[in-house]
Amino acid sequence: MGATGRWMFWTLCVSALRVTMRESSLEVARGDFVVLPCSFYTSASNHLSRLNIIWTLTPFSSPEAPIQVIVYDHGQVIEDPSLIGRVGFTGLPLSADIMLNDTRVSDAGIYRCMVNNPPEITDPGIGELVLSVLVPPSLPVCQWDGDINMGGSVRLSCLVAEGIPTPEIRWDKMNPDEISLPINMESELSGSVQIVNVSSQTSGLYRCSATNTLGTENCYINLSIYTPDSPSGILQGVLLTLSMCLLLLALLVLVLWLHHTGQDGRLRKGRGDKDEFYNEIRYTPSLMKRSFV
Ligand SMILES: *[C@@H]1O[C@H](CO)[C@@H](O)[C@H](O)[C@H]1NC(C)=O
Ligand SMILES: *[C@@H]1O[C@H](CO)[C@@H](O)[C@H](O)[C@H]1NC(C)=O
Ligand SMILES: *[C@@H]1O[C@H](CO)[C@@H](O)[C@H](O)[C@H]1NC(C)=O
View: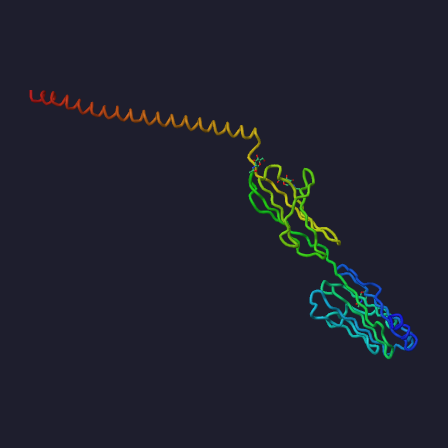
């Protein structure tokens, strides 16, 4: 007996309850609400007193710990304690749809909807859908390190803390013309640009952007490469150095001359002393002579 045959058999003999999911996968932006659809078809829609609905979640973040999201049983609704106030049925008892408010990343995973209405047979009594919770890129952090002197090398890095799906990171130089730069991905969420032998043309505004389906966030670095002055500046520098050298030379000459003349003066002064001494010697005998005479 094929599937169709079995279905015919159940329809003919015992009515069967059938669950269908109107979506197999859904996406929601974190913080928004989402309706998880689960329809069931029953021929006993007037006898739903024993209707039983169970929604379970196997989270992507902790697949080993599935939870019972919400249960409808004997007219009572029971929510998982972690979801109280955020989850509710929207169409009881004719639909098993639930609404999830204020969605979080931890809500992402595989949801299963199980419906029973004893004594009805179910075929199938279970449906499944995948919920993704998307997160826009966070504001990236731009940083630079390295040597911003001419000829040096500079590294620009960009780190984005979160984003689902994983944001694409790119670096662009904004001026004089906008150009895209080759990027090294250091991890899924961090990319850098290495610029070697920097020159004055390297100076300018750089932008890192992190983009996913929910949007783009940018950070900027304004790089100023430290270059020696322009040619006229070099000339000025040369002239300045030259004049400084001349001045130093002049000073040196002056010092040497002063030194020389100073020695001369001392020599002459010394000779003068001796002169006086000799004079005394010279005159003393005559004085003595004179006194003795
Ligand atoms: C979800 O929020 C809507 C309004 O935004 C509200 O009407 C609904 O009751 C909320 N559902 C739950 C389960 O808290
Ligand atoms: C660095 O760049 C200058 C021109 O900007 C070039 O003359 C020089 O050869 C480069 N040096 C190296 C090591 O690439
Ligand atoms: C970048 O820095 C230079 C010099 O430091 C300045 O003239 C220029 O306006 C800055 N540009 C931006 C976009 O901040």
